[in-house]
Amino acid sequence: MAIINFIKRIMLQSKLKKAAQAILKNHSLLICSGSGFTADCQLDGESPSYEGHHVPVFRGTRGLWREHPALRNQMVTFDNLQEHSFFTDNPHKYWFVYGDLFEKLQRAEPHQGYTDLANLIKLSGKKDKHFVYHDGVDKLYQESGRFDVNKLVQAKGSVMDWQCKKCSLLLEDVADNGDSRSFDFGLDRINGLAQGVPTCH
Ligand SMILES: [Zn+2]
Image 1 (cartoon, rainbow, N blue to C red):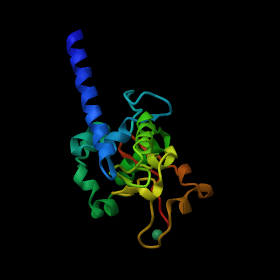
Image 2: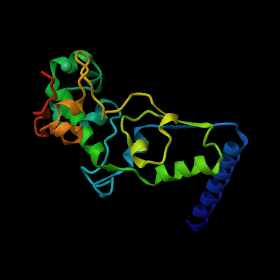
Image 3: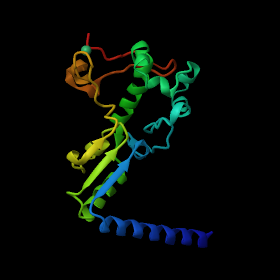
């Protein structure tokens, strides 16, 4: 077993060396990440493996149902959540999923990987020649305070920013004291519903 671990360590070192050489050799650096990177963040200082204390990753309907069993009973699929008609017809179900994600992301703390990536950009000398492309819907790159936001692209926007498409009001406009972080979605986990649906009228 010790020999296998030794070989694995040597192979990993070899791969890391090749990666470092490739980064140094090339002109620019593009860092791509997704919700899997976010999922390793701790909530309220708890280990992400602790049940209920992690940033959920919905890998399709099965992932959604594993996270929210109440939606399985109602046969709400991952595809349903992407439909505008589902959002308008079932706002309490829609906001249950995204309100829960919103609340968890508020409690998430950037992990060591953010510091490591920021150091990699600095050490590689690519501060002016890099971009970060993030597929997740969080704002943890910004919250870590270690990245140039002008070099950050969020492909899907952020679940922390909401705006009414009719009147352009923002979530903070309808939250108490103008603070979107204080918005109470009133999550009913038994029935998979949000009692506190944001509304501008
Ligand atoms: Zn409106």
